[in-house]
Structure formats: structure tokens, C-alpha cells
Image 1: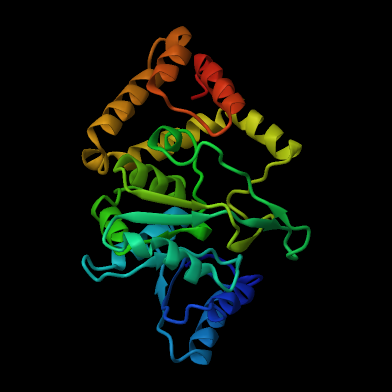
Image 2: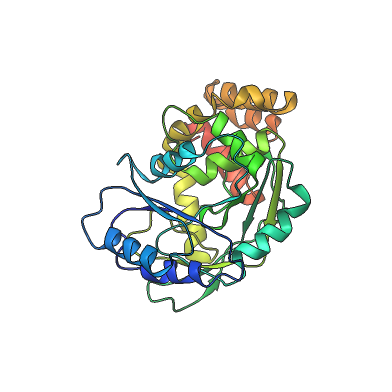
Length: 299
């Protein structure tokens, strides 16, 4: 868990971890300089649950992605830990860990990642609504343009942890969960997406990134795709794949290189060049909008 001024909601998240049906867990928390009650709440949780290992570390104070990466860097290769990522303000369903581990059990000796849908709520855990569906499923061609693995739902097998630890970037990506999706699909690891929600994803003013699937959310995505923000995201995200690309499959290495070249190509020809790489979002309409926006330097 990566924390930063999380006192307002962290008690509910910690309580949901304590109530997991799967009881064999440890909690590592990296705190990015919180001066509210975040650290004292974690200390109190550790005292209340002496049967579990609860460790609190000082984070690098370079953003949420760097904070999570600092925790991955603390894991020693070969320790054979399953790792679940946790946000400070969500609430896990009681079977979250157990369900993920059952799904990953047949892939125990392989690099694999599990993620699930979420139930979005407001800050008071009211107004529940489902997260988006992803009909085309996971792929590297999708991962280059879109993330479908919500970090708060991600669980990694030990081999996946070792894989990610071996390609940690020098500079953190914009979004850690998107980077995990890109690396895992690029390396053709197993990706399990569970359409059943495993947590309440609390949306509030302090969220780094919100999501949704209604008309308002779709309008926000269209504005993002046609604005300059999306290209800035990619510019911050793609360099973090440099250390990983050598472990991509041969086909995905070709897709990656063609994608990078197409982004920098002659503007009027970019949409066709990008289309030929096969990159796509889950929505055909969003794919078409994004490829057309590339002619104006928006990708």
C-alpha cells in the first residue's frame, strides 16, 4: 500500500484487509511524508493485529507510482511472494484476496497478473455503480493505448513480481498499473481480468485518476483523447518500458517499435501508420477518435 495524507479514509481500507477470508497476509506500507494521522492509524492497526506482519516505510516522495515502485524494489528475488496492490482509500470485499489466489493457483509457477472490475462509489461509499466492461480483453496492442487493470485490484504471482523487479525503470511511469499491464502483456505473461468487482473504488477530489462509463465519463475521455493531456501521458509512460522491451516477445517488440515510429511520423500519415500497428482501445469509437487525433499531434 502506498499512502499520502490518507487519514480520512484509511481506517476503512485497513479494516477490510483485516476482514479478508484469506488470513495469511502481510501488509507493507510506504508513506510519502504524510503529516496527518495516516502513520499513527497504521501503527495502531499493527498493534491491533500482532498476528500479521505490518511494516511502515518512508516513501521517496516522488509521486504515487514511484512510491509503489519503492515497495516492489524492497522485495528480494526468489522470495516467492504473491503481491496485491492496495490504495489507501478503497474498501476490499471480504473474498478479494481469496478469489484472486484461486484464479492464479493454476499459474503459480508462471508470471501472471489478476485484476478485477470495481464498484465505483462516492466519498461516502454511496451511489454504487459498475466499472467499465472491456469486451476485447487484454493484449499488448491494447496496453499501448489504454490501461484496463486497476491497480487497486491487481494481484501478482511470485514470478510476475520477479519479472517486474527485473525491469524496474529508473524514472517512474505516469501510472504504475498501466506500466504493469504493458510489461505483462509485452512479455506475453498471463493476464486474468475478472468481470466481477472485488472492491469499492472510492471516487473523491483526492483521487489521482477517476473512471466511469456513463455519458459524462465518455465525454471526458473524448476531451482527453483530443486534448494535449493524453499525449503527455504517453510521453511520460513509454520511456518506462525501455528496460522491459528486451523481454518482450519478438512480435511485441516489432509492434512497440512500429508504434514509436508511427507517433513521430509525417502528421497526415500517422493515423494509417498507427492503424497498421494494430494498436487499439477497447472501444472502436475511441480507437477511431484517437487515431484521427494523431494527425494533429495528440498521440
